[in-house]
Image (cartoon, rainbow, N blue to C red; front, side, top):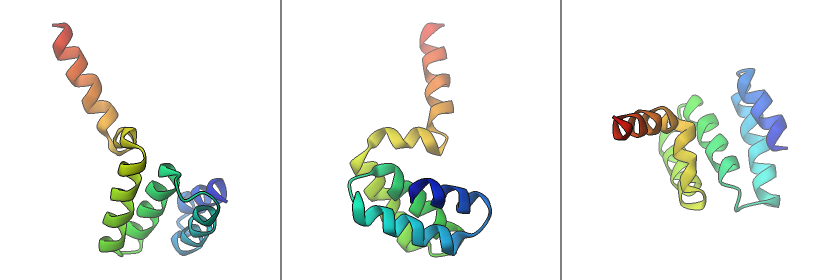
Length: 84
């Protein structure tokens, strides 16, 4: 259901994607990536408070998820600076 939700999210079908993420989270509530994807769907629907809560849950479960939010690019910049 998570992959289906991600596909729906990419198609702009945010409400349908949200339903898929909710179903997937019933089976695996400790999957940080699902919480992250749910936060994206909620943000696209303008449900910002809920999106922030889901994103916080995602980061608590998997702190490496910050890389998905552009943190990866910043991390590379930091590593390059250290090398110089």
